[in-house]
Image (tube, rainbow, N blue to C red; front, side, top):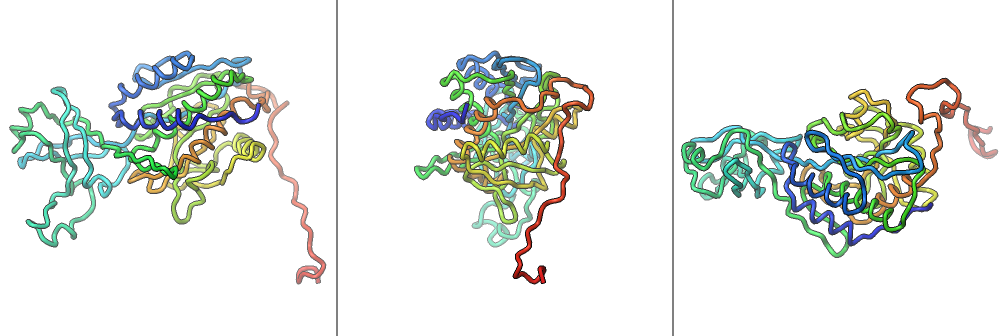
Length: 384
């Protein structure tokens, strides 16, 4: 079955709904409930791990050598490190992101007493007070603080509000969906990947598409802190594709259009055969694509491999400008990714040996090692 038609409006609506739900790592219960409910509405069988990672099964023709698609629900955020005597809160980041992009952010503080609104500000925020010193402050989490929009003039009053060390701070996404297809928001990493997966599932259900093997649709809750898909895979899963962001920046080959297929990240190359198949599917289905390598990046696939899962992994991405900052993507990439996911899910199994966790050499894969043919032009310098 070729790639399926993607409902762009459904994809957009799901992304908007996901962005509207705060979900920094460690505070993901609400978004888990939202996604689990949508998966059940689409007809999938949903199970949760103890902490809330989602595994949704769409049955195929057989269980052996099953396939998995994975995205993460958690986002960047912050936690309260200290209640300060000036009535502000010292913060530490959840995940790896620069305080440069925290300055000026509106945020929600989650406490046992309820939520409070606030703003992350540099320690010297007023030009009328500090003059040029506001332009010479260093960048770092030691140089910002959360101003809570409540009566909290000192540490004692903050305590009276029920604010405690360790409380979670969620950063407002401030999304904009432009008519030209661009989407600008925080937390597109990886709310956009989740929306892509939901759109792919919706397309497959609408088309009543069958798959040669079971499809496991996985949604993890701690990728931003390096845990990701470490414990959600089952032994019958032979291959797993992560859907995440690709960094479009000088020196990178990622794009905000089409699919960016990752050849490697900081943990090493992705599976040769699985990646090659994804490239071939893009070519056969006329899906725009490009390849890239990410040097300071890891995804759900890394955590799965490091946890000891013997699974082929690949990474397909939507190009993001200013990742982990003020992110921008384009609908073209999201639609292209969803198309590729449907093409992969319905494609035939090519490595039959993968149905066994351990087997002999028969049926094992081959990688090309034959010397390439070279044609030299007769009038070239080398031919003389």
